[in-house]
Image (cartoon, rainbow, N blue to C red):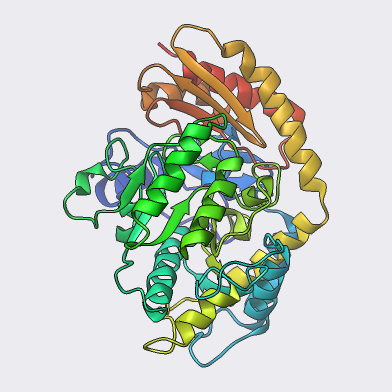
Length: 451
């Protein structure tokens, strides 16, 4: 029997790493892979700042913000204190019939920070009447917040007398989560959920948006919405950046086209800001690049600074009133851990850090460092494109990446990356300094050119 480590120890016992990895291989099913996995994962012992400390003593600069969530890095004293302080008061309480300060204040702060715009839409439409996103439904994860957004849209349209509007529309190349309805609006052909064709609901798709603004494509968007206006409840897109579907960027003016067309036909507009929200693109929310407000907006990932799972679906007053005045009298959804006080308290602390505004310069400096460092890769053999936006850097290859070899090449440079498909990319924490950005660039270059 392995002797347990002494109290307070942060190091595994002798032989502990091998035992843990053996147990991992025998019992732990990791994401997007078979059981057991094709390669052995790297065992993380601890994390601090922007570094992951492996059990073998190596330290890696985290170029992924733990799947884009840990925007303030690890063991941040403000977030640590918020979590500890809340744990002394209340770790959890059911949200049905009860409420509490962390959730109330978080909802109010999200409403205050969310995109706002003047103007109104046509009467009788669920998308009319509200200048901003006033109401917050707290969820467990980003994928669930998209599920909730779809429920909101479908239920609102039914309440408004449009029961035939039961489909969703989007553009190809997107990714909205791994639960069933979100999977149905991921790219049906090249996406990771194409396996489920014939099982998932059939939604309405238009071609992926071009990088630059194209009038003909804009007309295609409007034509799609007009042609299917009697059957689609909502249009859902990732604004400005299509994330896990391919790390593609597009002109923000397409969002204005969608806003005008959906308002004209009384169709709801949903922005999935789970990857882009809270500063990643250089704006607090990607919608701000276009100056438009959706009817429903999903946030997650960076909401708690990567500490705990929490997401939210925000909606306008018009959407909330339509749902609440319809059959059932409310939104029929209620996660057990909805509004978890620990997660809400940490999310509030993360928002306080964003409110000080330092992230604006941090994101700009990271973007400059990524642009200067990655641009020389353009034109190299095997490299199809290099692009940077905000604190995101992408090297697209002309072939699928060998994920095992590419990851190992980045680790050899002291960097943690998670390439996929034909992409080697980075989304570092906002607190990443210039020296570590340079190291991340070296890791991306090594991963992109391995073999």
